[in-house]
Image 1: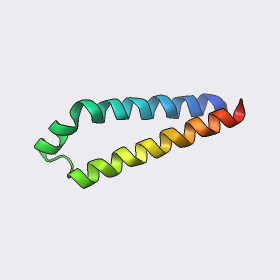
Image 2: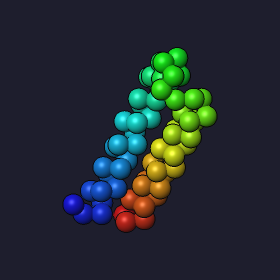
Image 3: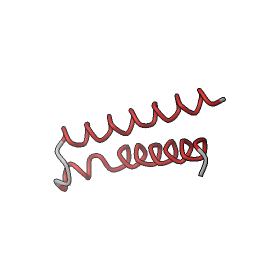
Image 4: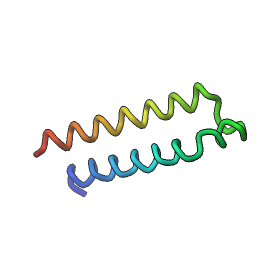
Length: 61
């Protein structure tokens, strides 16, 4: 897998994770799978990874 393919895979994974958070955040909190703080931290980490991967991909172009 090339660096570009890896970055695209990271972007795709982060976008899927953010979609999951968007769709199921309330349910995750209601079921007690995560606290609000843990969920926010996961979302922030995912956003950071998405931004990092997109920036690195843009640098390669």
